[in-house]
Length: 248
Image 1 (cartoon, rainbow, N blue to C red):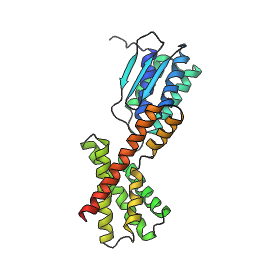
Image 2: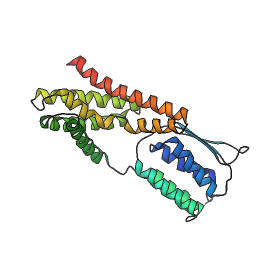
Image 3: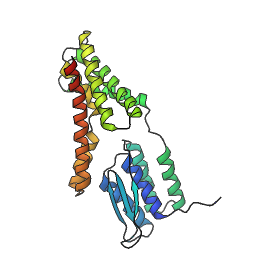
Image 4: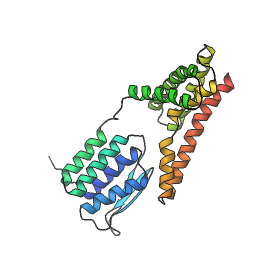
């Protein structure tokens, strides 16, 4: 069996790919790739990352490698693991082969938290935000339930249709309908407090934070594109809730 050729470009690209897919800022992705390349003796690494692709070459006149990113999620644990591997590379603690296989293992590993744990966390976040935004204890339970149902609906719809904005729209719609039904059944006092708390787990807080940090770091293309993505996600959630008012 022929042994796979492991190059600096492959290690840098897989590290950048994992970080970008997991929700890291683009300037952090480029910085990590450059640090890994310099640790292997590359004096002039050239990396350029956007939310949908990575370009990397080891010098100005060499071949440029391109990697397209088609899907993104949020997994800060994977970002931390890649950072740990990159620090080991910089310190010279692991070989090129070890680094490549560790990164492959990180890429193939599943999300740290199962969908069940994510839904439970979304329920607690929904109830907590409802209280923080001035809701009463009567609103806590319906917000908790509506937030969990809406988040589960978003996850399920996301598996059927791989379009993030449609999944967010469906999640917002489910939250609107379930909130209205809970109040109709006598659970809760104010539908506004219930809905505001229940939609908070869907709000793209990470995208907004990354957009601002990329803009502040001078990555204008990535910052603007992430800002637009966050805006469209927010619009999809709001439109889903607004549809409920049209029907009820």
